[in-house]
Length: 316
Ligand SMILES: [Zn+2]
Image (cartoon, rainbow, N blue to C red; front, side, top):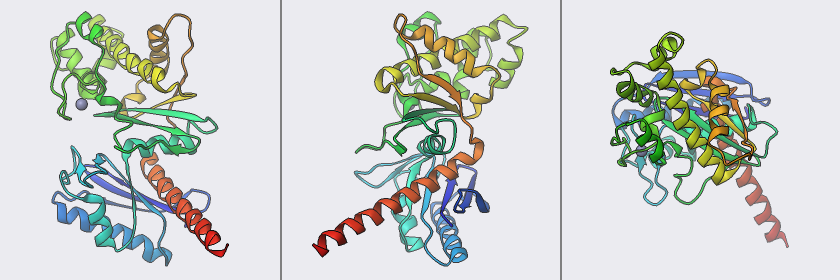
């Protein structure tokens, strides 16, 4: 077994074990416990189950919706009962071994860079548009991670003031504690918030999409959503200038989303400068576990390298 990945979500925990060619060789799914102690026990149980099946400690990563603050080791998460708790350390203590923790959006970005739509490109940026918005940047096959571990929280970058003013949209408090985050306009609930202003009702994204052809107001909501999302893509291009931008998440399944975002982002870009290729994620719902497993695999490789060089140094 090459590695194992756990996709830790608010309603379910999915373990996937990967063979030498990164094909799934075992899979286990359990509901996400709603108390902290039970959550730790469930995660440690899946880690131990994997090691027992393999007969050794399999490189393992956990991809979770949320952040671990490296300065305090405490978790910050909207949909797990783990905020303010040392989630990573407690899982390691309960399982009696090391595991890698990675944000779920970063896991998906890594998976797309290695196995999916970004394969073969040097700098791969992913933007995941779902009930929340996040992403990640992979450079040369490694997810870029800095000292604060907040890089990739694209949804919490400020929304463009000129578009907020142009369409008379409200500025609301985001779940992260800041006001006016991009996510409050471009996540699924954000699209409904735009509809509230333009259509006079909180219409769901699937209904907005279905009504585009017959209702000019629904079409307008869609165009405004594209403009906000494109502005974020343009800002990210100005910051990173990736070779390719991979779009994932529930809203990426909307018909024509890639063409619409490409046109809107080109429109937002300076003069006649090009924009990176914008493409659809390929991994689907399996990407989270695969990316987490790959992060676990990379961590083990790096440790083996460290060990090799330090022993080599000792020998000299
Ligand atoms: Zn925010």
